[in-house]
Image (tube, rainbow, N blue to C red):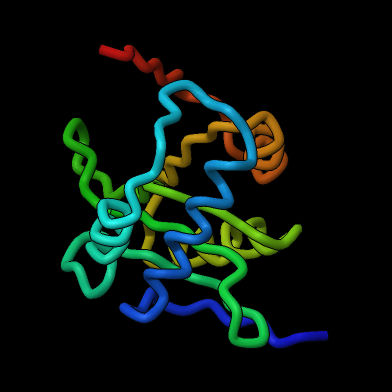
Length: 145
């Protein structure tokens, strides 16, 4: 069995995250889908390296990135509780995304975070989240202008 580690995003990982974004983009159609601008994607992911509020974890196996999740931990504006809010999540390997999710849930429990907010763009992710104990809370809509 190969060795998997979960760690914070490093500057040198950002080009691989851009490749992962292209993989995600090509994997299915979704509302609002537009071509990827590599420079914009690179700069966007780069924000998650050593940012005071934004954060990103990656899972690597045999020195190759197999999963990632970017997020923010912030106070909810209505009640002040600390919440985890997912910005992006992608897995190249079956089971790696779930393992990363479970790591994040444990991290949140350890920090006494009581809510984890994760949006989904795909029915298989919807089913995974429900199996992991999440319940639907909000529907997102996109208006193309």
